[in-house]
Image (tube, rainbow, N blue to C red):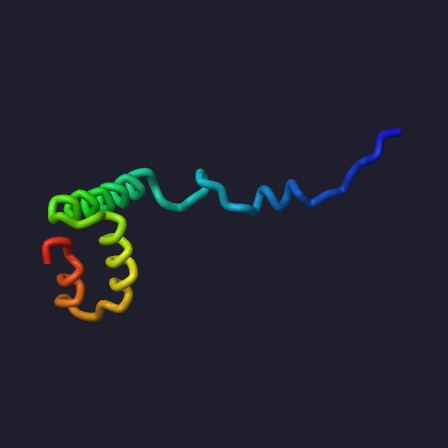
Length: 77
């Protein structure tokens, strides 16, 4: 005798987001990566260790309220 197993995992999988369901485009991803790589290369060109520089930027940027605050985070500042 065959027994049907009732489980909601199929519905759960259908509702969970996957990479191909994202609303962004590959062009957006490419642009984001290009910006990140530009920051890394600019840090290197200015004698900064990229990880430490990015950590500082991502830590301090949310608190930046003026153009001067943001300019102070540039790798050549």
